[in-house]
Amino acid sequence: MNWRSPCFSHIPSCQPKILLRVTWTVGLAALCFVCTLARTAEARPPGQAAPAQERPPQQYLNAQPGVEYVGDEACGACHPSEFESFKRTGMGRSVAIPSPDELRALAKPVIILRKQLSRSYSVYARDGKMFQEESERDAKGNVVYSETHEIAYTVGAGDVGKSYLVAKGDALFVSPVSYYTRLRGWDLSPGYNQGIFRGFTRRVVDLCVDCHTGLPLLAPDSHNRFQQPPFRFLTVGCERCHGPGAIHVEQRKQGAPLTGPLDFSIVNPDRLRPEVRDDVCAQCHFAGDARVLQPGKNYLDFRPGTPLGDVVDIFSVPPTIKGTRFVALDQFEQLRMSRCWTASKGRLGCITCHDPHVQLHGDKAADYFRERCLNCHPADTCRGPIPKRQATSPPDNCTFCHMPKRAIENIGHSSLTDHRILRTPSEIPAVLQGGASAPPIDLILDTKSSGSRDTQLDLRNLALAYSQIAARYPELAERGLAILEQAAAALPNDAEVQSSYGLIFSVARPREKERAAQALQKAIDLGSKSAEVRTQLARLLLQKGEVTASMELYQQSILMEPYYTPPYLELARIFSTLNDRKSALELLDRALKIDPGNDAARQDRLKVAATPEKNP
Image (tube, rainbow, N blue to C red):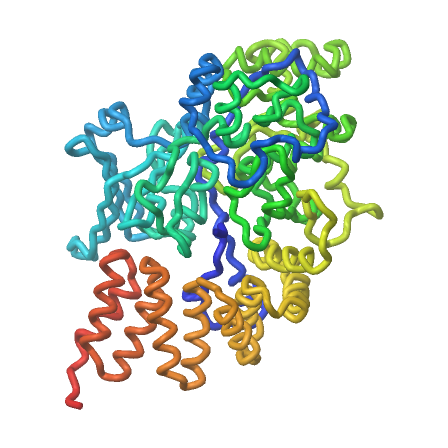
């Protein structure tokens, strides 16, 4: 399972370099409300850094593969206060079924009009259920199409806002309308106003399912299709941070004696080595600029107490290129720019200041975090004028000056806390100042693994990371293409490398389509299950006149990903060219059934329907 998949069906004809920059798309471009997770409090004495655990993380019995998850209720039986408190935090309310309160708030339907998109949206409650509708009208006011879905799940605790999921068969998609707490009202979901996403077509696996839910259950060999029910546990739970609990529960039931001062049947993040401790939080709170799963891994393979790099490599763009962009889930990067983190030599971590079991608000939160700051910074060292300090609410609110809220670039009506911990709001962190000591223009690997790094694996992951970021950072595009070419040559048997190489090379080097086709075919031969790979190869073969092979690939794409519409449209055009109106109309009707707002499918259908049938 991967968060990002390039899609080329919308790319117009243009110069190669522009194509390269446009095509390298990132599915994580506009996150939903994952940043609503913890604004939390503490469990240890004020400001105390997490004690280092000298024993190797492998000694935690539940960090091994195959240990069963038991669910939060099993934890709550022995830890009721932590359980009840956690369930009131953002993580404990990460996903929900629409509540009676939400339904009552929709007694009067919400209507949103967007003339620039030629769309209108409504949110309403009916018969104890929540619905969202998207529709379009023509210049005369006639309905062009209307698509309505019941809301299956609410995503987010509401601290910043809520997004919503709908089900289409066994697949889940993000809805186009979200609730924003700052507005106390509704607006289009992130990325919809800009036209990055539209309708009910944004796949949930490209966004939030791994981190917002307890344990997603994907169907085998699928990218966005789920078993029923789709989640074993609905919300983020205790085991996300402490690891699967089966061994711990069994040992405690049996009264098994501890073999030392620590209980190694369950992970306590507070007792881990700093880098492994931080990985527990980073699994969801550090998106990075690119994430590349290790071969054969998925995100649910991660176990607290083990290095996150054993499952996924997270890469960041150098700060000198990235600048001061504020996006959701970059708190880790910001913290590492801070003097506090540098001076602590890594001892400072998320749980130095945050306790995931508790979430404080208002003055209580400000007072709590001030205590954390004063543990290392006595009050008399503050250079701020006393009148200014007393004017904050509450007075002497350290975070108000040194960690202010800033707008998030990729989520409207939202903000996050600046974790760079600046002396003054105008201070420029050292890593952004450049100069002779500026880092090289290359991606930064932020995760560590348990063993020594393999050179070829490093090349693979770096190449795949570049394929994810170049659309946002065109100054890295040429470097990325060179790395991807090198990886494709060095790793001829890696299906994901060949897929990325073929997809990108087919557009970045349009005169060398044969090389791209060979890479895409190789990816399929190596076992790629990607509908996008088959669709792009079908396009290349069609350009060569290989119609039968192209049609077969389109059909395979449809079987693999029934809700991915480009192969429907492109195969329908082939049938239309072959004067098979019936097959063309059938495919276009199927596309419009799963995506009624698809303008291209609708226009194609009108053209095919208006074409006179020809006698064979």
